[in-house]
Structures are given as C-alpha cells and as structure tokens.
Image 1 (cartoon, rainbow, N blue to C red):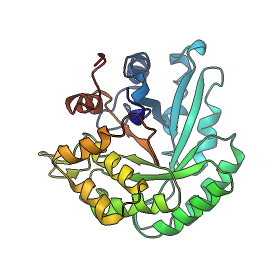
Image 2 (image 1 turned 90 degrees about the horizontal axis):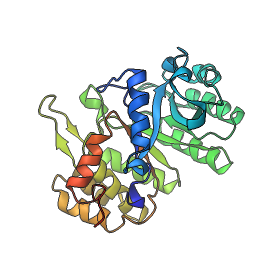
Image 3 (image 1 turned 60 degrees about the vertical axis):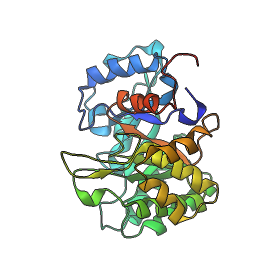
Length: 284
C-alpha cells in the first residue's frame, strides 16, 4: 500500500448505508486488519450509543489490541460515559469525533465544551465536526488556537448526506481546505465519498465528491494552490489529471487530510486498483 494512502479510510461499516450489525462489523474489521491492504484501513468507527450498550468487549479478545474511533452521536456530554464502557485491556479509542452544532447554529458553544473535554482526556486526538455554514471560520480559528496551545484537536466536515444541501460545492469545499491549510489545521471528512472520482448518483441525483479528487485538491492546496485551482480539481470528472497528480506523490506522506469514513472498504480499494494507484496486492 503506497504511503500516501496509509490510514485513509476508516471503517464505518455500522453506519448507513451499510448498517452492518456490530458483531458482523467486528469480524469484517478483523479481516481488513490482517489483509494485504491493511495499511489503507483506519479504526472501526462506532457511535457512542452503540458503545454504551455494552456489547463490544465481549466480541474482542484482550490479546488483539482492538482499536476504534468513537463517534459522539450522543453529543459532547455523552463521550465520557461511552469511554467508560471501553475495557482498557480490550479496546482503545484512537480518536474521538463529535459534531459541535447543527447547520445554521453557532458552533462556538459546542466547540467550547468539546475543548474543555479534550483538556481532560489523555491525549486522544479529537475532531470537531463543524457545519459549513454560520460561524465556520471563527470555529476554525478557535481550533487552530487550541491546537497551537498543545491540545490534540482538529476539524471534521460533512461532504454528503440525505439532502442536497449537505453536499458542499467544489468552491465551498476548496475554501474549507484552503482555510485549514492557512491555519495548519488537519481535517477529516465524512459522508458521500463513495468513489474515487466525482460522479452523479443515478438513484438520488446527487453529485458526490471523489476521494481521489479530494486528495489531489489537498496536495495542490498544501503546495500553495488557491481556492479556484483547488476547486477545479474537486470538480473534475475526468480522472486523468487528478490521478496523475496523486500518482506522482504515492510514496510521500499525506498532508493535512487525515482521512474519511466509509461503510465499505472494498469500494475505495477497488477504485484505487482500477485507477492503477494500488497494485492489487501483487508486486509490480
């Protein structure tokens, strides 16, 4: 697995549209972690509500060092309770991701509470999911200030969902990527990144961002590209330009973009193989 794709795709099997049961998700994740493409795969993402149900510890062996990413679907206040349900000899939370506001709400109150919680944790990275609406730049400033002060915090953004307004335009997403670049602020993405290249879903009519487009755009942004150039890469539906840009950097560390969650690991892996960015487990 080329270094550029290391840990790119977190395993979100229990989330829609995959909606796997917890036992099935644990078994499948264990298989991913021992496969030839294991370096592509991040932790198994689990909602706090599922963790507090208390079913996880019995599914894993103490010797395997099972790692999850905790999604704060019950809000900031529900995170400590969920963490208390993790048996430290069996399960470790590698990261915590929490939405701090709904669309149109001021993100600052929720972000302030999340930063207070982060101060009480043991250095676990925390991602604040910030709506791409009112108060976005102020929230990014607050995150950047906290990160500069030593807190392990970063941003998270939604790039899809069940409504058209949840899909940011290429210009909107480019502006966010450049804003994070300007603040030296890592970010994660969630939802809608089902395939490598930008495409229209024939069932919903929604146009989805491609994760290789996002990777090419992030590489361009960190190299000094401005919003218009970054947006052009996000908007590209012809894979040639974005694939060649990414191919040239396959052996380098991925800058700025931490990764994203996908309910399928096979879909992004298959796309990477089809585009010739990963060799399918065989030596070239």
